[in-house]
Length: 228
Image 1 (cartoon, rainbow, N blue to C red):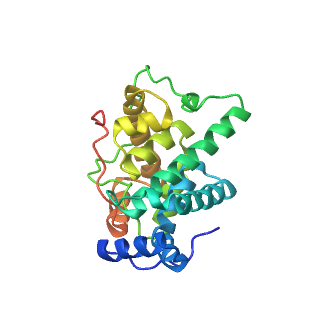
Image 2 (image 1 turned 90 degrees about the horizontal axis):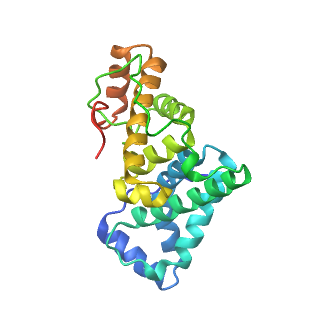
């Protein structure tokens, strides 16, 4: 189940009306809701899992579970936010099953010692922008995905949940089954690693700034600060 051509972003009034129709059994309305979220859900699953088949399975399972649980959706958050949480849970469960087969716990994903010193990257760009936001240019998106894939699963999962999906530190810790302190350390490591990887990929600070500005990346918290 690969992403289809998305519908235009739905305003809250349209989304609410579609949800009510979907709850009443209108499958076309549910399909419109799904299409408005598909690319975002695909991005979550792909960036957490890094394998096409597993990402497709997680996305399909998330949409099926959303349809089954639609009556429980109360609209406190947007529909795409709600289904994004379901997709995150599905992807994390696949990660857990994968690691159980390999005899490794989810908490052991990060090969780095969380209590050890934070290494200072050789190359750092003084970003004020955050690669968790929407990326328009395909080449920049490819480079970011490649850089994310280079992270250990533990660092990648923390970065995706906290910086890309906007979960709080406590919510990220709960999702991953680790402590809040572990989340903060791994997030800092992930941000530092991504900054260095992207700097290398673009071939220097000036080129990074040029490409990121053209691609419309959002703001990145300073890697010199422990994330909150």
